[in-house]
Image (cartoon, rainbow, N blue to C red; front, side, top):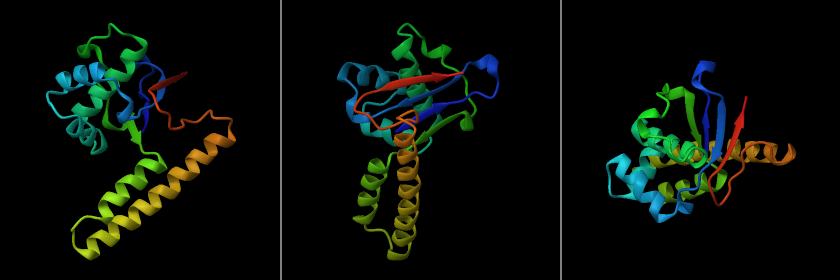
Length: 152
């Protein structure tokens, strides 16, 4: 996932970008995230992030910011507007989600629409990833860990 925090008001901080792979979070970090999220299931947390659950995304932002500021309290996590925190999926993540949708039992016409949407989003993600490669990796690229880039 490509996570971007871009506050409207410069007083709220600088634009920050991270790559986040939910499969590469240590168990101890995951337990802290889940405790703050109020759930016991990692899958529920990840699904919340994917589905634009504001609490899940605030917990994710807190986690990412704590990588650079380990003592950051959750209460001090920026109170962002929904469009100030974006989560975009890599082409690999979209392909995985598309496979899940393809094997589902939803009505064929609904499935066709959803698969078409995934195909379009995968094209956009592949272009974004290719542009990042063309720029010498300056755009976010999927990684096997959590990374941060702060731009001002």
